[in-house]
Length: 199
Image (cartoon, rainbow, N blue to C red; front, side, top):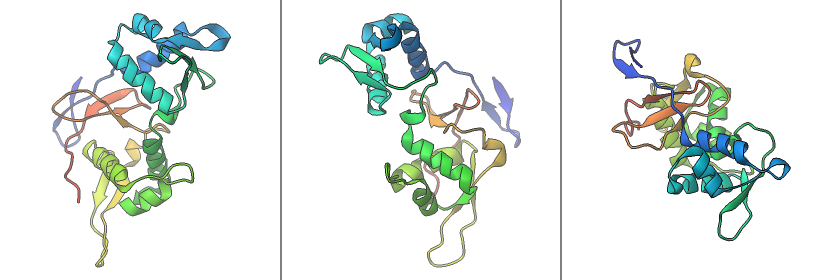
């Protein structure tokens, strides 16, 4: 759907069936009862997705502790998490950054990294910078004037209208001229206007 932004510029908002969500739903459909086991072939048949794309998603789910590989050949898996809701562990760094942004309202990059880092997961400055850059480009964050002083930093503010919910918006891994941000709270995706333009 094409509409106009508040500044009169054309922008696009689309509702998209993301592959990882499709694969997660397929896992729930085909898994073997109480054992919650399934195979790669099961997922490929259920989703119609290419095997290499399924493999990439399953590796991400393994890394997040959401599924467990049961066989050496990597063909059989078990859902480790309880319930039917897709866990947030697919993007732990982004989720912690988003949680901190929602709590702090305004912050510098250094303040954000400090607030988002926990004993279990340290957040690196490059990861935080990239995510902030993405959210500024998508219109979620506003970059305010620098604080006065020799060690001044840009101060960022999460716009109230863009505080859409508990799940961190994530960048879609698809090949388009512009980066695409997916808001999991709204189920919508939109282009990122500018990347790599922040100090």
